[in-house]
Image (cartoon, rainbow, N blue to C red):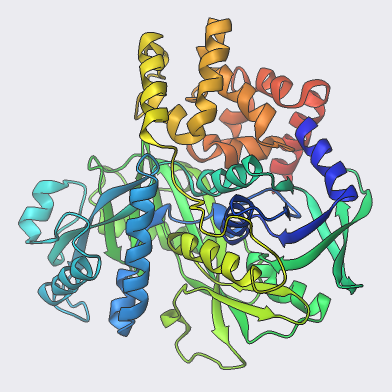
Length: 536
């Protein structure tokens, strides 16, 4: 909380080269890129960072294999290059994962023909991953007993990328990188008005936690408000070439239902892709793809029924999944960029390709669409554009993304081994504690080691039935601007995604975590969280 108060004071008193509205993936990489290259940057979000679309994805970093069906070869090539770059740059976070796909009898294309598409996809991806292979129904059943192969004509395996942590954590790491390079950020700070005055943008903002209002001044304004880009542009009078259409996607999280560490991929009853995604001891099932007019979405009974009906049909489970099996739910919209007033006749064919519109006279940038896979391209493009709008970047060629170099990583693991850190790994954890600390906090993980050296209790699990130790909660409290309890439980960590709401509230250690995160406001923040969940 001290970090946020300090940043709010800076936002009041300083004039910035760039102010970014929105802390989703597009805003986060724009901030990380610009701050690393030497610009004076501020970023605000009316909610928490990665609080909307960027916390509701499938956790997949894929090159867009489905776009091959629409012959979008250039887009697939671009996305595959981006996927490969992310996997090289973030080897601890973005890993190769195999997809096991089945094709039902009567599908619109024969299985072997679809398999040939995966071979083309592998080639477009520069053979970066393991090669695909064709599978008979018998081979599929042998590989994964949970798949119902009664109506399967064939299938195949291929590879793509996967976020080992949740998507919002990956986004926050770009926010953290921007802060490390001087970016001033604040969550729960809403821009209520933006006007040009004397060659500057004057942004009137409101603190959602206190109601206080003040102004932020900047040379350039970047609208990275995700699904709300159009709404904010209308508010500020910005005309753009692009606009958004919206697709709602949902996922249900249940206890693990498949033994394989692979993603099971199917075509659902309506012909759309449907995934069964491993999440350690849990499984994430989805997604739907429903056109909506409003970015404010919620899961309906019909959505749940669609997902459960499909999974019960496609898998041979010991018993059908029911509503009682749902541990957590995820729901968000995909903003799909379209140009002009055109109405796409088949909106399901729209890609997640990003678009950036520029108003040079007003020094204003709008970012439309996009997906996590393409994030490095967005960051690079924004920096190039900003440099044409009167902002000097002192270090324009600096590489702004990627994990720390191997010497830091080796030093961390050497210290962790000397301390026998991994003996503190949670019994249900899917990896050693040292691996998780390095992946989530990189150089800041050294701070956790120092906390443990000074007090061994900092290595103990703090919240019952989770992986999180006291030391990392201390680190999060100091460095990650947790303003509401949900920020930690849902976005800085994935606790809410693997434990039911009732069990989270009742977990031993939660009150102690609140005291670490919020000090004298711990009881207030816990009550606020419980009330918000009761009203959801």
